[in-house]
Length: 259
Image (cartoon, rainbow, N blue to C red):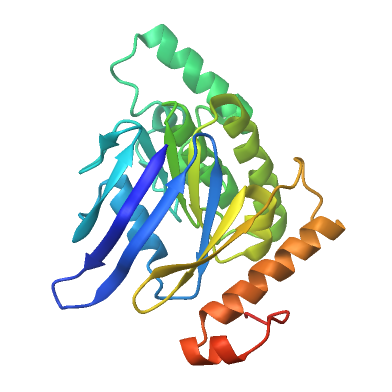
């Protein structure tokens, strides 16, 4: 289990980015973090990844405190961040140097096959499309069999068709390895398509505001009544999260126009 215990972050200039984040994520659960700009979603992911230190509170994974980069935690950024001097397969296998060559080749080949890039293993990143590059990044994250996978808006720069295709590849890999997943997204439909729970954050400072369970069977139909209901619930929660507390208390629940 991944546990965030009263996590806070204050920067050197006095900016309070996060305040008292308390969140438990079960093994193999997919949780979407969603909220308006400035609510600290990426900051929270950086703390869990060990790329930054919390000002207060603690992070633990299966009882072990995370105070820096951890071998059991993988991260996929918004951009693929592939090494341009390595081929697709070399990028995927970059973190597997300690494994025997035969095992490394087998795991890399399998990961590339699962994201539909087996025939592109020897190509350079510059010769791949944006969607193909992000597939390589996803394969690179999964090939190490992480216990926790963090995704920071990995599909935001892609068109809707490519995004939907990558959702399928991501879930196929998740079904095999079953890591715990935290995904930051601004896309409500993406949260409904992927997550078991949507956690809504409110800004200045970033705090947890609401949680919407998403117990929908997979594969999910975005036009089903249950998906549309979940979308409305998240939009309403987002709308409320961006209002001052007094306005929130005085305003009855309604379908939100978050954008």
